[in-house]
Image (cartoon, helix red, strand yellow):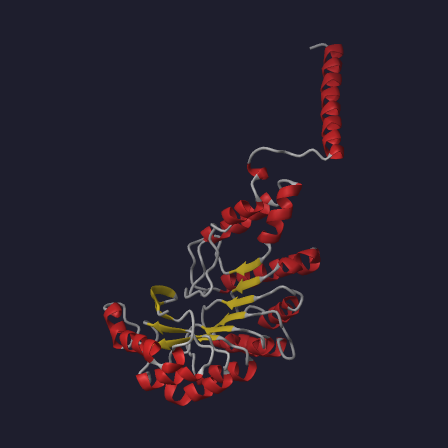
Length: 358
């Protein structure tokens, strides 16, 4: 191709690019937008589509990191939020409504045995917190759920930053600290970091015993669930002292009901949902009958796993208390006028049977 021909082709290319730029500019100035395809679906449908991606469940009973499939939601939503202005307005808030750190992107969810893995988990937590509080603070109001794993790696520094950032999330309503083990240093650093801190918007707190220092900051919590091992009376006492508005307490399968039921009746007068663990040797129908003293109680849950650890024949064991509790809820005079009465039979957070008694 001769120089003159190449020059002519370059001019034509430049002219086409200039015309394309001017056409796009006209579209932007006139406000015309795409009216076909995915982008024009109603917001409700787009949100419904996004809801089908995996998220770390709340409550979570897994004692290891989740597999990389749980990263897909974040990746897809943040990619969609960068596709166009209209999609950004929909998917940016959704993509940052959850701070989730509990996934191993390189494997299938190993236990946190190695220092390098614990370091990566701590670094990812700080990275996400930094994005929504330092790099772009306008994202902070979108955060509604914090669902994270805490490790002992630099825990003094990490817990201070964790505390600072949670206070900036004014729409935060749920906190879950994932179970992976027990570490005294994390509990000490959490207690120091959250001393005097208030998170008044939090309504649900799911935590292992070492994260009990969070209770003092969540005084308006309605749902409290303690997960993991070493759940005993001392943790329940912290709930009693810190959270007077509780409506549901779950996870205290090892407590002595004879000793603690009167305390719970006095401390949690707003209780609407109570959980009994059929493996607890202190459970009896005399204990169950005491719940009529909760004026707002409508749901009794019978959990079939805590305290026994059995895997075979668990459904048959439910008959020890399921039928007597059902009769009590139907025949007791204090329950007769209550609406939406339910008996739930559950195992590891999954509902096996839901029995309506209205």
